[in-house]
Length: 313
Image (cartoon, rainbow, N blue to C red; front, side, top):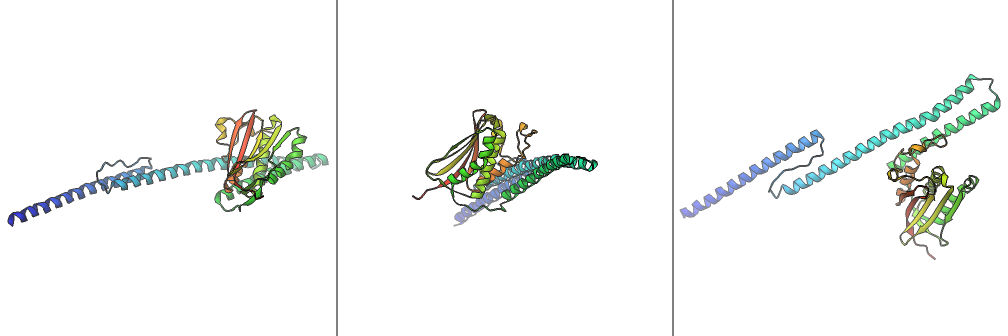
């Protein structure tokens, strides 16, 4: 009996010793985790927790902590990128506002300093000042439109839209302008009606932006086209030209806020860099996508993809 009790006491002491050792090891590991986390957070580094342990209770905790650290680091990187983008956008907007306003003030000052100016010359200067003031208003409108789209303050209602009618209407709007400038107009649409899930007003603006962009930046090719096509699931609208195109290095960036190619800021046309960004946001708000494929002086295509709705015969 005494021997049995002695063995039991030894076993209990061994268990207690093992539990104490496990407690000490876990406390040590938790202390390491605490110190390392404090170091990572204080130093704002991209490190991960590298704690070696056989404790089955701590291993999943370490894995999830590292996942959380990675998630926060990605969020921080995204925030930094967005902050830099916003700073650049504000800088560009300031420049694009300052330039036409300076011109307007110049025209007004010229008129003010010459009260005996010829009436026709005064009319011309006022007309130029009016045009420049409208440029400022358009830029401000685009900026706030983009802000509303990105904040979600302007929900876009979706319904069944007739893509043949929308595409035809928007190309017809530009037809006279294109023919006067000597452009060829190429339109390809199926005879059968094609329906999509979208918003007619938003699509009008999308197509207006894309066709305007093709005229302004693809004019060398002297042709602007629109192709409506589809498959079982989606409807595709291609707006294309045969102008100078966009190099591969720029194709992934044309939808960024305030991004303009070097030669887009010229005397004949000074783009705000917001038009394609707004276009992309409008397409995405309709559950669609937009992408570009460009081969300079061969074909530059902006393709809008929307969810197709079956046409009931």
